[in-house]
Length: 326
Image (cartoon, helix red, strand yellow):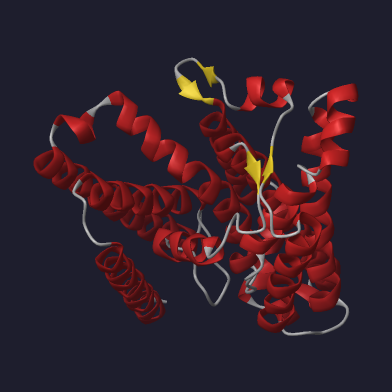
């Protein structure tokens, strides 16, 4: 391992350690202010379930931001996928052929929207911010048209039995989050795809000269983020038992915030799945502490904003320190 790798490893461990300390302090505050209501196993399940959907989207977002991109549309794509997967026609097919129809529909919609983003960004040379902002509006509007601004109740018993159930004492959606997180860690840290993602984010031109097809890789990354939104839609349907055009509203902001707080550089070139998971858990625990203490949601928003700004300032400090020691 060269000196640069050792610096990255040590600084990454320090950042993750800081996140663990922050999470532990939040838990102490929750226990001190809400007592057994916060510390109960039931409340732990609530925190993990709250983190699960955002967490899956954040895993996909980690790859895109690591590559120097951004995806503002994940919340809207989740809403569109949840609506499409819960239409009467889709549920009628699921009643006949099984719950896999609904899951397949949600994943296909998410993947399709992600690939559209990827084509616009990689081959249409549209700035990622603009392309995904357009998808944010278009996906939400299409979801409203399909649903007729009505909530679509899930009535497929086989789907509800599986995805609303528990496995070894934890909700199935929490296990889905865990599986996606482990798969994301392996993909980013142990595969050529992950190394190419970091290379593209660090220096796209150098990555191109090294033989990486940057455009095609960018397409794959946005397809991956869309697929994560499709998985999130399945989990949202399980949590709420309803498809709605409002599902996932503003979820893209929570997702990006968790990724940034977790230590992934907004400028690209460095990403961490472990940090992202810890970032998601910090925000879900913070939300739970506020709910347990009946605190104003506006104060919670201010606290989130302060955490995000603090995380970005720390990123800049670490970047300057690493540059100084190079």
